[in-house]
Image (cartoon, chains in turn cyan, green):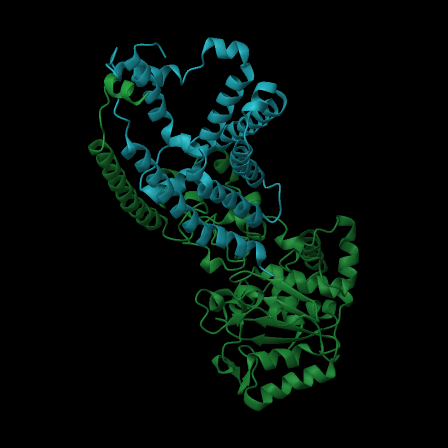
Length: 220
Length: 365
């Protein structure tokens, strides 16, 4: 009789605890694994420094590169629009900030809801654009694996259900709110085992790329 | 003087000195609450004027009498309370004069005389854990309910305990409490939830029954759509502040004084469906959010277990900080162990590392 409310309570209770545990344990183990493995002992004589080029590459690989933009404008624009839309929706929506405050004990100011709403729409549009690009561009088709579609779906569902819940487009509200929370839990559970880990490893990886090239004395 | 049992509602109201104008005002308000067009007001008035006294049996189970308090002492004398007076309340623990065998006899007589036509109002949940947890005259609540409902026209579950189990059903539910709908399947059950429900809503349901002789349209929780059709959040006068991102952070900060949104202070308005924001309480004086306190979500199932009353709706039910700390500690421990194994493997590889000269290679080939 009370299914949708029971579902919401389960999503906000047991399911959330399980998902957070898998996420936190998984991410920490994977970071430990990456850092503790270290690098193979390179016996070749270094031809340049590592630190400077590494730091430089963190910046250059974060900003769009002119050549890539000319060849694949949709990759660059869609990627930026979707990432900013997602990050704004996730970190600057006041109900989300309340969750972070309850978890970590500190908070930050949020944005008015209509701005977050617009960001969420941009995020959804950006994600649809990159999916379309993956499905139609021949190069992207070759590069795309099954995991890419999984990761796309895991990212898309929280944005979509969040939009539906915020605009109260599905009745009853507890059901769609529960679905939104559940979709985030699915994301959290699969996060450590997929390329979603790039959220934590991207700067490390960029530094490493730059540092390796610096050591070999080539530009990156 | 006519027998009070056969008197119509119109006669009762006139005897209490209610003018025609006052009666029509009430009919207009009732019609608008029932989401009927203004053209229906004369029909509502005519039907209510001629409505005869329905027999009502009120059963109180695991409850706190707050629902009865809400209905009888809210703001009398009003037309709502007169409607309430008009019904032939043949059995009600708290309100009836009779007690003991006489009281039970009154219930049996009413059931017999009005078989198939009387209404049963239930407040309180029914314990299934042990029949002895709640009894009346030595009879378990379950038995009383099943007996009484057998000849009823319909059942009105008043209050969240009767509608959804309420406080008795809250974790860990020691008495095995259930709602009326979990037991009564063969009769229409209307859930008038709320802790307590708005008095106007129960009289509205009665008025609907008196006017049309039918029960109102119900939502997925069995509640009348005309009262529970929209959420508190959607009808809240503080909603513009939510949309603008203006929130009170404490109960006495600037935001609270300016009447900003109470979401951060735990308001459950977004998930709560009730008429508080429009019907209000205490003769339309105010309602919880207007008085500066967030909605508790009292008209929703399991609201006692839906996390802290002062936690924002987006905060999980459990101790999320603690889960994260434990998980982080576990992750660190396993991660450190893995790192130890890795460094051992690396040290072993380094130890076994042999050098090869050009001469060695030439020898082999």
